[in-house]
Image (tube, rainbow, N blue to C red):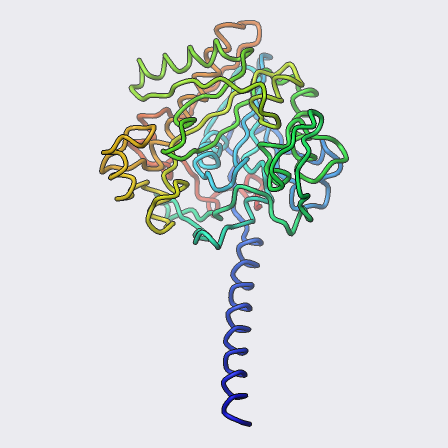
Length: 387
């Protein structure tokens, strides 16, 4: 074999080895199974495909957890991991799932709403495949997901996504973004079937309020806030004022734009009787002018470039050497969610929802997120769901 062919063979073998290694890592990430522990308040677990038959047998199907009180009351739906690269949503939902006890009304939680996006990643941006949350019993490992569903589950993307039913023209990627496909349709693309399933839950279970939990860049004006349409605005404003005065963290209110279609805080309100709210907490990891997208940045939110930009007043949230740690983000989501429920119950006492045993902001910041998670190895197997 000539020297030229030897070099070509070696290079080809090296490229093949890299492809195989990368493919193996992505395969393992897609099929990594996370343990979800159900707490004492969970009364039943169903699948989203029970409300949207077109999801059966797909990676988009996901668990729906019900926590039902002994007394009748209102119903709240919590959606997390709409965007699976915003993990404070999932971590907050799991705190509720593992600890909440409902005395009156019903709490419904979908902790992995875009299950396909939770199995997708963004290697071009150097996303880590996993992150771990320290607990009293070790650490709890999670997949790091992406904003959009995996093309392995929904493909091909159109040149332009035409929103149903409003016909607004959206980016081709938005067809895999479950915060652009509301209200969905029964036989539409896979992510439209996901949002359709959630809408069916709201209709069939008579959901009063829906809380969609997210995270947003510090350089994006719609961050550290509650987004709400007109029908939900009074409760959102009262919640914002209350957490600021009582719990000492800022959380302003943004109005849902009527001309931008496909968003949960717009379409849920327009196409059902449910009052929608979308929560945003600052997520420095998503900002573009940062250092490497490391697990440390994801968890502590510390970045020297953002600190420099903060000193130049280029950010939309306070930012200093302490960054924006996960405990603050999750704590805010817990407090704001609980306060939305409390304010709704005050306004509509006949639909009261009473929930206890869920920590608020100061407790999560003090104790850490992992403090509220239970060891699946020491939990009755019937209360552990692997996904």
